[in-house]
Image (cartoon, rainbow, N blue to C red; front, side):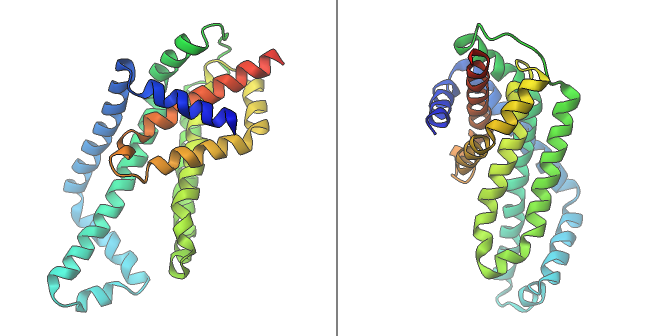
Length: 237
């Protein structure tokens, strides 16, 4: 637990450096513009999908009959927003993991781990495949657990999903440049509970308004610090 807290503290320290702030801004801005454009272009399609989903669980008929009409319209707009925000956050996380990590790794490695040798055990193909698996499992987790919302247990789903997504998305890229393939496999296996714990704690930030704008880069920095510290310790041992 000490290693996780140390990684979080170091990530918070680095978050507001000038070299990092740009990486905070552009993935979130790009994700926002992307989904705004898609929302405008395919508003009718997205609305139709939402109506089909609501109809499948028996809510659409209730909304149609609800009076006054502005209440039903407001609830539907809220549903659109509830889907839009997670999509923006998910897209920003993926962009940060795929394209922002190299800059963040340079910041962390030059400052805290300058002696750590680079073995390049991972690569772009591995990073892309890891991101695809993370997204597919994340979406599947949401869809499979939808019935749990009807009995109240669904309240834990966002936290479990965020923990999985963060640990799966960032752990690979955090150490791919410095660790060998064998070292990566060992760290993923031996530190499994710590990766999940770090994923859960960084995932909590994504549910806090305004702070969630910093969430993707904060998570990336925390995983880089944790991963490189664990790798350095493994090599010393």
